[in-house]
Length: 464
Image (cartoon, rainbow, N blue to C red; front, side, top):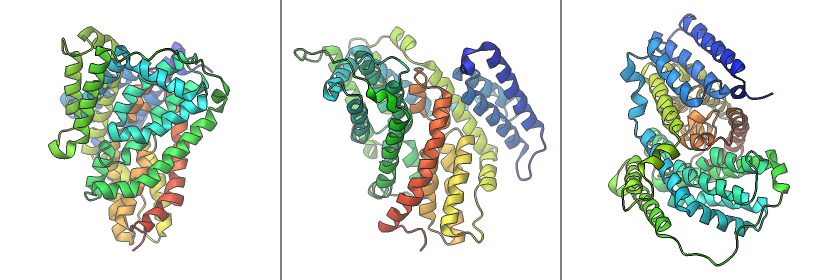
């Protein structure tokens, strides 16, 4: 059956149906312990997830519907509160990163790198895929942000697929884009400086040092990345039986001035990201500095028209609306109420039973909370408090919910890096959701079979 977005009548009916569901949720009696504002926020969350997951409306349109619904329903005091997500640095970080990716494409760097990847793969799709995956951990050391890596690599691999004569939407193309969308992020969380997830989780757990974080998270996350990569390969294995067209051969041309400037500006931003322990700048600031240089006359490689036409503005609308929604969930008390209802009490449960209950509850909360910061903010304190009362290592339980929430994406609005891929039309929301369900199962497996025994070996056993 064609997706909802391809059938206007069905899209309209689905939109109306989801709005009705949201109204029904809002008109239902307010549950005990939940504030009226929190009740209304949850109704808007139901509407937002429904619209984003089914693609009944374009993602950017859904974002504006969410803003309107927050105000009209009374979930937030006014328009200024509903738009608060657009004042968050991450929205402008995403915009700047998209500009870096656009510059890599327009300057010719993407084509140069794509040619190198194709030549090294020797026309073998498996080699092209696995060199992408092996590049994730290595590139993390240079570009800690998953969003930055995705913003650049999506252009490089789009060009590689075009040069290899792989049709858009072919299984191989979907496999590569799903890897960029869903498991590229996992390499970043291995490093404490890898993005918002490790920074927030570390602070909530208790300011874990850079080295200790790496020791604790490297094995579980590399296991998740590996298993996720194998799963993508198996789901799209038909695409790995084709032969790629050969990359152009001939003498290697030196980098042009435009390519060189693009590389230098990107490297400068990367250096600032890697030295954040010295200057303590928010990651958005180096990204915006690079953005300014890329658009500066005589220095940059883009003009304002390139920026207006080449950057996917849907990303800004969706990330801003999702941040506003996450903030409303927290400020209204709805997020804390969800955590209290869904997370286990620990009474009489075994330590492993508590971990399993936390994994199940975390999946439900992650589905309802679109922003990873909001998820971590409500689950880590509750999980650690549960550990203290039940005699289970609080740090381990904090790590468990971090892995459970960070490993999955159920819809593109949950991650800036996912939006980068999704906005370019390579994957549908349904595909992202299905893979999110698979990754939920893998996260459970990794935590129970790999992480818990490993953490015990490095000095953090489940029980003390």
